[in-house]
Length: 411
Image 1 (tube, rainbow, N blue to C red):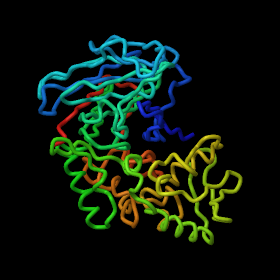
Image 2 (image 1 turned 120 degrees about the vertical axis):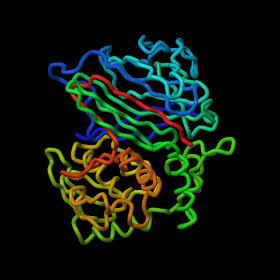
Image 3 (image 1 turned 45 degrees about the vertical axis):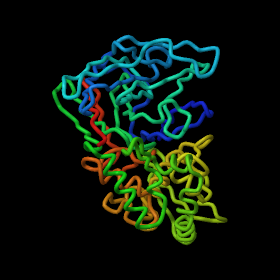
Image 4 (image 1 turned 90 degrees about the vertical axis):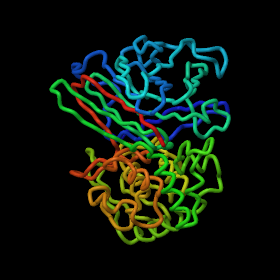
């Protein structure tokens, strides 16, 4: 079963579902078998930003405490369980800003319990502001809310799930690219996995690529760049860019969608669900891409494709087969491979991703900038051909002993 993790972001302007990696290959929130992992895990947080003022935050759902919302306190060990406040936008009841050691110094070690839907956040120069709404619901920093108190700060995060069966962690530029974050996972046998992500100065490289693409095709890729004090602060994803400026990318993917719908009105599209449903085939009839016995998809809009979560990609009420088709179809649109490959995703070759027009140039540029091209750049970037290379920048192990997370300078 494919599961798409969505973090609920609450802001002063309202509540919105923030795009997040799909975690097609991530573990379930809790394994049903005998626990394999220890009840806690150490995280080594390394500051390579060039600034001696860097803060970390750990948020998530405590698996061993009925998935209760929790944060680590500033000592990096005490688990804080917020109570439900009586009013929206209430302050946290504990100091959860974990000060990292000076740049280039030894790692700051923190300890986490089993967590689901967890994030490790970093900010340079100033602490982040987290607030609470009744529930309790955590009001997380937002890059698409101009009123957010963190809007002018340099901050970013990586994601992880640590449950009874394994640790799964990934870096992400699904919503935006800002701070370079790298992961190193060591298990009990000493084996090591690394995902380096963006290099130092990577955000400047991404922004330069967006400017070049805007000059090339006349689209608003450069409008995704957010600056502060004369420096590139972050690069927004196309979807978040459209949230901020609804005039961006109007009609961008629609001609391609029309070509695909015309093509598959006379040709079958085969999707490997990579689950018990196996291969399913669909054709376009009556302007719907219909997979017999499973369901149908209306033609997606540009916003639907960039979000991977709206219109025909809204997974509410879908059966298991349709839930498996959505990420593979959405990935084919973002990578613009749907017209060159009628077998998704098994006929895919990463060398052809983003080479056809139009395409998700933000994802292309992020991957081109990342070390080894690895890291989530859109929500279903972990869709992988059988035997192929996963592009999502994840590490996982059933017997982890230490996860080192390194944050570096964006410039």
